[in-house]
Image (cartoon, rainbow over all chains, first blue to last red):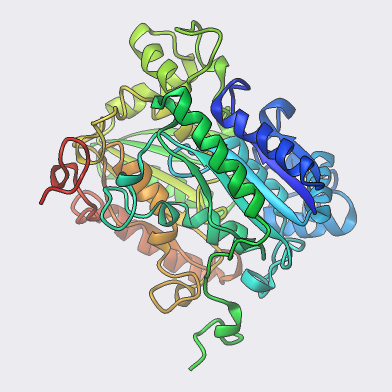
Length: 233
Length: 233
């Protein structure tokens, strides 16, 4: 497999960064090719703007998605975006590794999503979910957070973590066609012992070993809706 | 009321930017004080990093939330963050106005959340939800998107929009104590007629007129859980 790891942590010595390194090590040892975008190390620009296009189809009025569509076709999309798109095109498995900030990605990774998952290539008006641009590829998120498992789940104070992450798992990764496997979650990371951290890293290795056979999460399919996106009866 | 508007759109001539201007106009005419952070115009830095602290409690290992806590107390938090915090402290009503990017905020606004909703002031270990740092204040989101209403809701292909936005409405705004009123949503914006846009702006004005009396969204409360955050029986 070609594996594309996108990681985002401001502290290279963090536990989350150790998870990122472990992804590289485990997947490389398993014989896969691994390409890494370490967004903090790259000083990645997360702000979608007019500067993302070397030429504009409408220089007077920015419709970002429209310029993305034209920019990819015309080769006028910013080089840093084009490079990330090439990595995406080449991968079989995308892994996002990040610390959960506000039940979502750090802004630097949100900006990677905003800028790199371009309209036209990633999705189009009637091409999303199982018809998304990256259909046939697999995606996974590998995350750390401060909370504990009992704070999540149907009886937990925050409900299911996957419901909090729905905008990412379903609204982003599945939206553009990926088969999304259940996340790996390192719980309570700032507070656990070194021994517990070793246990988490071991579980993380085991998850990585199974990642290409894990059953993807189930979401609604476009096939269940008609051409105007009303439910088929 | 003191109103704090945080807006984020890369095109000042956009419909979403017109919504932002309307918020200022309507709330000012109603006799409220309005303070604005237009994140694109400010060139706001969305990337949480070690540079957010002029002095560090631990210069060798960045634990971002911990440095936030210390930085706010010691006055060593970056000036751009301190200014936004002052605006938050002074407001009675926070309005986030933005185009929905990937069922969430544009990265520049996500970074405002990451950097400005500092640990210690906004929340603490056992101080979130109705005990959050901004309890007693009200928050609202004012958004535009390309989708149509029938694509959302229990039978819609994407489910309820508020479920997609749960990380923001519940996991962020309610988490730090705000009473969160139901969002204003401008649907299908890139595709509608000028007449429809005028109708949307009229509905937006009506929503703004009611914003301080709207019933807040209901979420679980810390009071329903014990001191270890297990459900009270």
